[in-house]
Amino acid sequence: MATNYELVTSASQLQAGAKYVIGTATGKFIATTSYGNNRKITDGTITENVVEGTDDMMVFTLGGEADAWTFATDNYLGTAGYLNATSSTGSNYLKVVADLDDYAYFTIDIADGVTTVTCNGKASRNILYLNGTTCFACYNSQTQAQYIKPNLYKEVSDAPATGKTFYLVDSQNEYQAYTQHGSNAYGVQCTVPEGVDGPALRSEKIAAITFADAEAEIKPNDTDLFDVRYTVSEDLPLAGYGITVLENDAGEVVKKSVVWKYGDDLSNPDFRLMIRVFRNDTVENVTDADKTYEETTVGDIAYTVLKADEGKAAYDYFTQHGSDVYEIRNSGHYNGWSTVRDEASESAFEAFLNSIHF
Image (cartoon, rainbow, N blue to C red; front, top):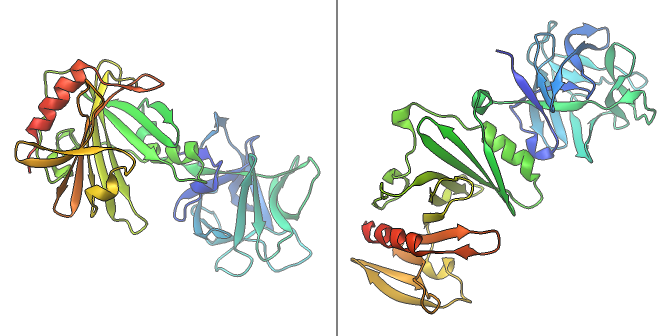
């Protein structure tokens, strides 16, 4: 099966260790064969910003870091090495050289849909394709239309490219995707940091999803997610569920949540129930100082509860368990303007809340 490569539109898609091909939007790509001191071209097919890889396309493994990237050759038919603009100041060379030196490091700038790859050792020279020729070279910065800046295309994971349909929902800085796998529906949520290209990051997260054998899959009532036990009613119309795990910069899990979605429409459920754990935190820290809470007990568990409006049932419960805080919430139905909690969701939430024990 051919490997596909997706257009890189954001710096967030640049990842050391990932594989890329380099080519123009018109389908001219760096080939595996040499063209003297430059890189020969080969033709490729691009469909909706996705390239179908061929044996003739040079595949590069990106190395280094921001502002000092390297391109290691994976399938060069010559001696393997790195793209290199060479120290020859008056040349437009773009060679493959066995060892790294000052001319093998590049800056990759992506702005307004245009990618510029500049050699750090020769700051005036960019990797360009001269239209009508048969090679890529490292030319002095050019503004003439015949000099074309190539794009980077990143390898796409085999999953879920093989037949999985994802339904995407955007909500401010959160991106959610839903898909059917066997008899189960899965939800995946990605929260995008400020300054990062949301759709690009979302695409990467979704492309990384794989499904294990049935017995190894995470189930919605898999209590290994939390140090708590609970029961999810099987009498309600469960559309699917979403599992979110948030890590800090050190790779430590600081928050986990699972949301059960009820109704016939996974992207617009009738109501949602949620359990969330905040690792190494306190109730005082995770609750809102501007809101009013009251204390209550359900079974043998003491909760800090968000005070409900007149005539309404409480919907947000917090409890301290060791060094962690657990939140149990009736997330209701979001109608586009506000959250609505009806009798069905309140009844389901009450049963869910009463089933919880440590």
